[in-house]
Length: 67
Image (cartoon, rainbow, N blue to C red; front, side, top):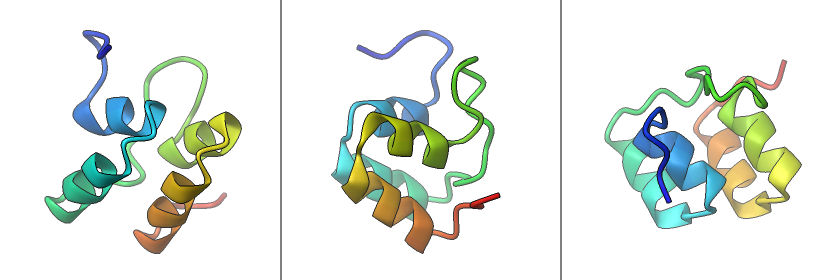
């Protein structure tokens, strides 16, 4: 379920919807946009913490910052 404050990319990363993550990034979503969810600073940290390895791979290929 998408929370009101979530962007589409946050929701897709959180719920491991790989096809949606790929579509949103291809459409220009900012891979390094702060999540603003209070727990995770970036999408990469969120996906890593949740164990979403396929999403992590896509985010890294999209040049997500690792630092």
